[in-house]
Length: 222
View 1 (spheres, rainbow, N blue to C red):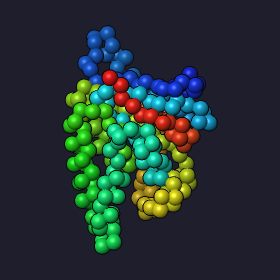
View 2: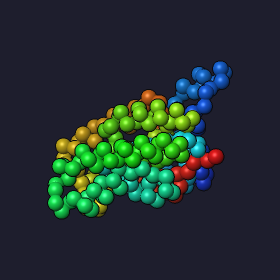
View 3: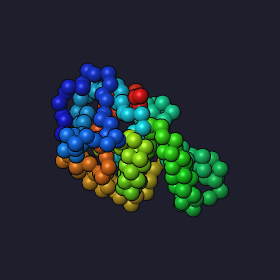
View 4: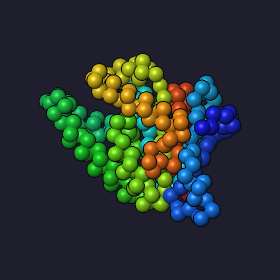
């Protein structure tokens, strides 16, 4: 895993695109996961992360870790955030029904919108709650069909910081749900730190809060 400071003063880091069919000489190289660890740099990391034109980028982390905030600031209109879908349904139903009643409809609407966005072929940044591993597997297959690759941005923040983030936005998850998210996030983080990425994932970037705050652009080249 890359923990060097080679990118500390670099304005942008380009992540590898692995969607095209590899040549015979590069097959072994293709199987090697790429992990960039941008934590513990006191915010002196890159200002931009650049991906291929058909790539999919999944942002994952604990509820309240700053995923939606990062997407709004850096995705440049290329973000598909489940929170946006919930906000639209809340505006119509929150005063009438408890969220638990219409939660399944919110999820269906989000995944339907995500499917349409993925079929467009454009590079996308996708919000991931961290517990739905099947979504990452589906996105990995979809990225390959599009001629792109799947990349993971993992926000590694302490649970206390995430809980404070929930309080700041005035919306939280239940204690049971948070513990479930915490266990899933911890498993994923340990795997990525070992260099073991989810199936179909070409690269991963580890971010702490300072590194995430430093990012101003998640872009797609080509």
